[in-house]
Length: 204
Length: 256
Image 1 (tube, rainbow over the protein chains, first blue to last red):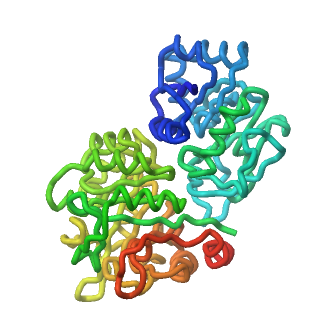
Image 2 (image 1 turned 90 degrees about the vertical axis):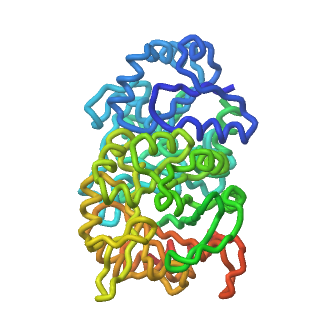
Image 3 (image 1 turned 45 degrees about the vertical axis):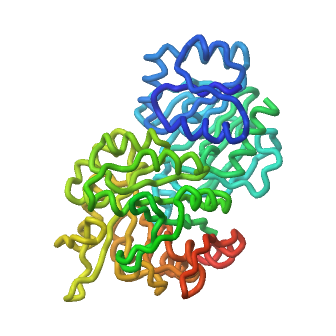
């Protein structure tokens, strides 16, 4: 059972749609009690960082999530904006994040991109695992669908699970204990994403 | 190596999957949901579905169709046809589309593009520019599924749509649609070099070589095709196909 946190941003149906196809039960909820009793959590999200944090605060989710993830060490997977929210801070709205990963979220540096590198980075990109991890296990030549204008920069290289290059290499997946995040959209990445979700429920 | 998106474009007319030639003579090619299932199995990069009958008939987007299609899409889905308001876009996002494509309503009312971009982000709004040459050989932007010619040249319209907040443009050559003659790289170059947002090339593709030209000579960020993916051979036998990854890598990604 995976609990998908609904804080008002993003296309949650597509995540549920893929999980259903895989035979993995899930629920989409904003209910604090449901989230407080979850075994595994997905923190989705498409949209503005500051707005995302504002919604999490307003709905009282921060405390429950902190309790679940930091105290009970429940596995959590942040997707896209959900991964960026794991960081301490983002330039998008100059807002504080959850701070579960020692990292900051910064906008793509236009000065390091060529003209044909557009912002947002949109499309399929090969990812390069930085080390072995159960989350990416068995995914041959991994490539995923990305849409983002900001990316996470980790303090500690050991938290970087994978990188992808758009003009320059950026961190596209993080892992620290029970805390996982991916910048790309596994729910829109065919069998690559299916394998990743299967790994998340099997190994965490 | 540069991986670019190679995108099937599927046209709907009254709930049926059709394919046009120069935006005319729609021929029935099958059931849309079944076609999307096949494209999903072929692991296409993304898919664009456009209902070409909605705006001319004055009907809203077919949400039930969008929901059924989205249920089979494990790749990004862009849905267009009949989107005239923020509420139409909202319902399509709720149905499971990642992006909406807008043509007539965007050109008539750029504020619509702005309002969707503000609420859902620019990445969710694709403005579709359909272009044909008029009798003086000038490129002109059209609306109403190619039926109505506007006075605007494509570059001016593209810049206006970019500043309204479009995240991408889909630039279709009506004159090349369904002809297998290759993309109009001159048209592409005029628009792609003027804007900073990605431009999806459409109209005329028959081969990966055409896609290479659209990127190299036209400056396109992504390539889309209809006939190439739903027909086989010059006699237009219906057969859904999509190039193999190794062919795309060797003939496109590695050489652009």
